[in-house]
Amino acid sequence: MVLMYLFTKPVILVRSAELVHRIMITDFSSFNGRGMYTNEQHDPMTVNILTLDGPKWRSLRTKLSPAFSSGQLKQMLGTIDNVAQKFMDYLGTELKDGKAHRLNIKNLTTTYAVDAIGSVIFGLDIDSFTNPRNEFRILTEQIFNEGNILQKLYMMMYFVYQPIMRILSFLGIKDPVTYGLRDIIKRTIEHREMNNVVRKDVLQIMMEMRDSLSLDMIASNAFIFYLAGSESTASSIAFTIYEMAMHSDIYRRAQNEVDETLRKFNLKPQDCLTYEALKTLRKYPILPYFIRKCNKDYVVPDTDFTIDKDTTVILPIMAIHRDAEYFPQPMEYKPERYDTSHLDYEPMAYMPFGEGPRLCIGQRLGLFNVKMALVKLLANFHIEPLPRKEVEYKFHFMELLFSIKKRV
Image (cartoon, rainbow, N blue to C red; front, side, top):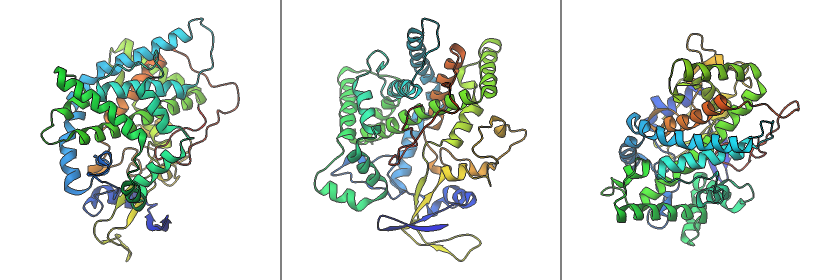
């Protein structure tokens, strides 16, 4: 453990995968919250499943879980497949001359992710491939635009430093991007209620809980699902394609798996490429760290060290995922390490979606979106890296989500 300061607030950085595992699962009762800023009265978009703690969080989690059940996900597969097919149709048009083309994969996967998440969360046919300047795509670019420093500072304070957020709230300063998306969500809800429109999506399930969920609560949670789902889906696909292109043997095996699964065994796309998706999320986790707040004095097992109540604890997931103690040759992209017949890693240390009661509620939906796009890409196109030793990439130093700065 490392004691450090986040601005003026002392925090503890936990480097032991075993202790991280205990904090998220075994001793969850001592670390059941994140201690994030919420203000239901003056800033309702700060109140959602990500920020709430204690009984309020547990109640909301119980209400929202049916939106991501196996049955609900099966109903969404057709929608995801349609969006992925539009992705393929767009690429087919761009590559119709049959020649090799240089493509910005991250831009393409972002377009797919915006449409896929927009469809399954809001039931909207966004079609960013033919209309790239739609409201959702513009707002997404504003959220993840590296030049939007003020917006990024706002998001950082929202997650890690409540005093600044209280001052901003007192001054009536709110994030315009967040509330821009809230307006879209509210218009969609009002349109459905006025016209008796019913769709098979996450928003519809939340609308059916209007007796217990306010319009602002629905909008805030829909925003979090969209924010977490769009960039994570886009980056996961882009990183997987990048690693496959840099490892031709893995790429060929993946293509063969897709061909055999879809043509010989007539299975569905979500049955393919599980190892590829898992290994990408190890090396490039969606969130590089998790935050927990200690809600009662906690004595670290086998030590005399006490984590005091109200102390913020940082769990550095990416550092653990890249630690040779838990993953031999951590920077190697090795699909075989996840083969259940001979695991070559410490399972306790693998936690890209978190663990325990606060495990990411949308993890299966995210994997479906990623695997659907990868399967269709491998089944229809051949991918190669640019003719240089290695494709370079850098990362936003101010991002909360793990995203690419220099596009792959």
